[in-house]
Image 1 (cartoon, rainbow over the protein chains, first blue to last red):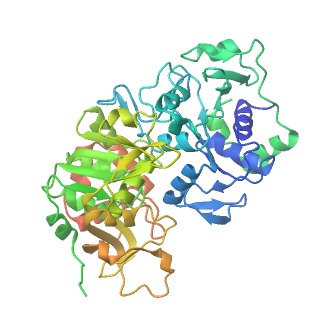
Image 2 (image 1 turned 60 degrees about the vertical axis):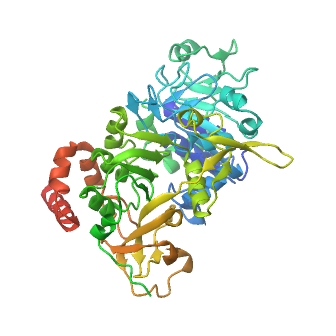
Image 3 (image 1 turned 180 degrees about the horizontal axis):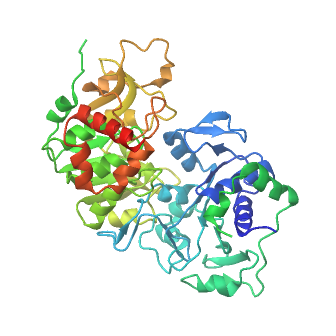
Length: 242
Length: 279
């Protein structure tokens, strides 16, 4: 029986399918397992880091040097697909990790904008939300850090030129923005989740087809890789409990 | 040639209230903590701090020394949210100029290159533009005609950085995997003070690319063994995670009273005592 965490790993891994020779930058445990799964199976050309300043192969051996200054240059060069987290995410894909409430004097100060503005305007940016709720999926974010489709369009062609949000993965399903007005769409449901459940946990109306498919099943080899090779300690279950 | 060695107290004696002060390192990594601790013991205040923020910002915020902070984030890395930065922001204790990580880098580059700004494709469409209304855009004079953010130079009165090795002339060597932006901080500041784990007579057969900071950009050199504690300074030492956790969970007056009442030597010995007690 495939666990919810394992469907999430698969959905994250599929974000890097057919990406070619780019850096996969996963933020979070499940995306990190997903990136490794993608590289071990259908996207062998992906580059990975050790989380510090080295590019490493699957065996952990260094194949390149990527200190922060070069990492930021790789972002602007576009040869990278990042999967970031989100404290808030809205229907157009605007993301907030900076603060909750009024920026002048926030109710809850979080990390700051970090690299979300440069990421979203320069390389494909997907999102991972381990606990889907109305607190995260909001009508409007308090501070636009990661730029959504409406904000990019309003800012003009320099903002939209390389802007792309390929997908959002949560513990309930997979989402994208492939709608005429670039609002968030429910693409697939992890088995055991209903579309109503997802809508109830979302603070804005989701676009969706009448029949929403399930997130795909893993192959036997993918399951073996997740369980025995990439995450034998089961760290995925800590981020997405069964 | 000039021997630039000095003490942390000498460094702080050259700083003035109201200055714009850059601090090297990144998050909770290779921060010039001994120099920050010396600053905490001084009367210098009302600072504009420019930093990829970690506990340097947390300590200065808790001590009420920041008037304005220029940053993209403040974090302890293994502990995502910096408690004192958080509290200060939620109390409205200082002004914030919040910019993106890459905007920050190009601001340092502009300052080091004596340019008023550099164009960046970052910030457009984000609320960085809303919360920094002074930021302007620039249009490419070439055929593309694209519009970019004109990231202003982050010029500083003084900068502090910490490296693994330095000589008495001010040349600094990093031995870890990442230089962060310490060379740029030094070049973007009118004066720069570099602390080090160890003063060396020469760099022997070191890989030349590890010689990050050049003496022409350095005003003072300070030998501060364990001077980045409790942030990491690999390969000399990793982050002191247990102590960082203590820092993050202890009320500020209690932490300051136990660890910050004396000089650097008494700080290091208080840390050692705490480790022995908790072993």
